[in-house]
Image (cartoon, rainbow over all chains, first blue to last red; front, side, top):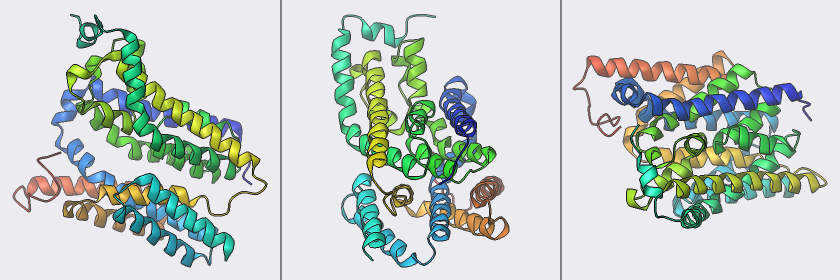
Length: 110
Length: 250
């Protein structure tokens, strides 16, 4: 069990909060230049999909390091998540619940 | 300043009606927000972090996917600079919400400040597309307040449930991974996303090789650099495949 110091947790929350609030508030103040900037527009269009892929890979790698030898369970649960999402109308909650339940069952029953 | 749309919209419209409308607006997305809040609370406790972190995240940051990722980053004692860069990158999309969120309908002062702070994806999706004559300051702020209430309550319920379990549920952390899989699938809806996906795959692969201890921040930096390079390459070759990449509908 990690014993993270309270100051570290509070500092992280404060930091994340200030950055998030800034990203939400500043564009209202400087709407026009932002709207005109081609680079900002393109980053906004191009970033999300790739950024999320990077998160998937990093989180997947962490899980593989934390549970070596469980690659098969991860592969099956990932396939279930993707299949449920694409076949049952992209209902995020349903897909997450199905994949997580599958993974938990595979880890605990086998 | 002359009176804003908010001032006129509120006249003759009982505040109570706005409250009822706001609560009703939030119910649909609440079905999604509350269970994710429960997952957040459970993840906090299962990661060995103190239970109060769930409400602290939901009040201090209030951005669902970032909060879930924060739990795994905090549990592995990620450096603050990496946390800052990750939050910035993941929440960068909020910059574009300002372009079409009906903030002019929200009363100046505290209501407007709260509305900006609580501008989550669900609030944006609910009010950016609503016809202006149906909007009121009370309605928007009430909707956002109730959405945050579902999220905070879900987190507390999740933390309580996880604390009462004799043993942590093995494998529950998959929920975070599943969330990102689902978000990726939703972001990749057309072939114009392929260059972004390819560059991101390249960036994270290089990052894992050259910086196995901090692939997230290094991967994000390489990815951003590649996208900026793509932007300048595009500027020098304006006619090259101008249909891909969504230049005109950004």
